[in-house]
Image 1 (cartoon, rainbow, N blue to C red):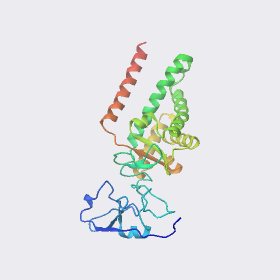
Image 2: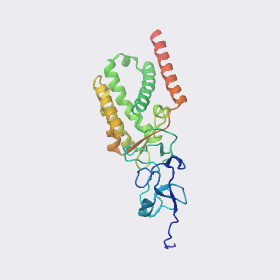
Image 3: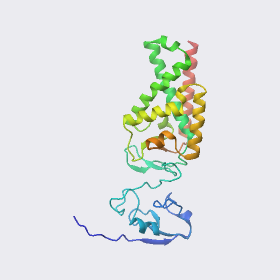
Length: 272
């Protein structure tokens, strides 16, 4: 192995218009502050990523994950990690389903409490529908128990199924429909134990264990924390990234269609 150290060629420019930088990156990935008009910038000769000149020299090369001009034995960072987003990429870059860092899709802000709420609500509806059909076939008397108790038990049991899906796919049906994916901060899918711990924390802290009034308070608290800090307590404690794709027309249409079908099935069930 050759141990000779080569200097990395620097391509210096002075930014005349920061809005005309190539790609979506407008922040230096080393210091994570904006690249402004008039800044002395180095474009990496290998991947083309812009850095502040001082940042390039301090790091000894490129800071981007997988770039050949990144210095060895240094922690690599994602193109769009942002200190203001609680560890969640702020402009849409993220992690792929195969655990590798790459563009997760065109997105906007990553702190999306309503998207996450509706994704979970879709999951609960689908799970409740499947459980209801199964119980109707094998044990219909269980459907006669108190609605509140049934809801608490249903959402608790769902956490075990959610953990299985997060471990296997890194997402759930509701999350997949709305373009949401869960990863550990190293880019890997969570283990079953980690995923179950997260799901239990969401059930208790985010859903109030399915108890009326407590659920509302838990929702409001989680909404305020996510909106204010960009990350929930269970994701911060577990070291998770919640990544979002853009919610376009077809995703919205899919959500509306699911609720329409669900209401139709409820109507048919009541009619019988």
